[in-house]
Image 1 (cartoon, rainbow, N blue to C red):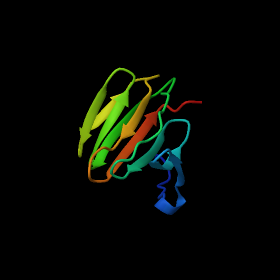
Image 2 (image 1 turned 135 degrees about the vertical axis):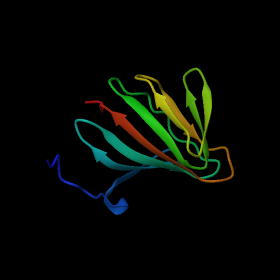
Image 3 (image 1 turned 30 degrees about the vertical axis):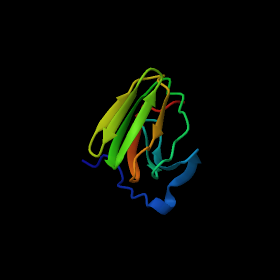
Image 4 (image 1 turned 90 degrees about the horizontal axis):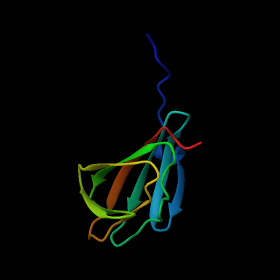
Length: 112
């Protein structure tokens, strides 16, 4: 049984934008999920994401370390750590460390 077509999305094909210092790439966005990455160099800070009304977001730290600042607390993610962000929770990424940070993230279901 074939469930769907396999699709490769090359980095050059991903939508690219900045949220303050945070370099973002969007690889997939459809009715079921949003999937992308974020990069912060040493000392860089991303913009505040106000949160998402109907989905949970997952951040996975693939490289480096990062501070994730929420409305009431800050947590540190190290390489290999993940955090699940509840609906409507504002957050931003802060790299106060001496090495680059690479975050893989997904939101499901996406906001309309």
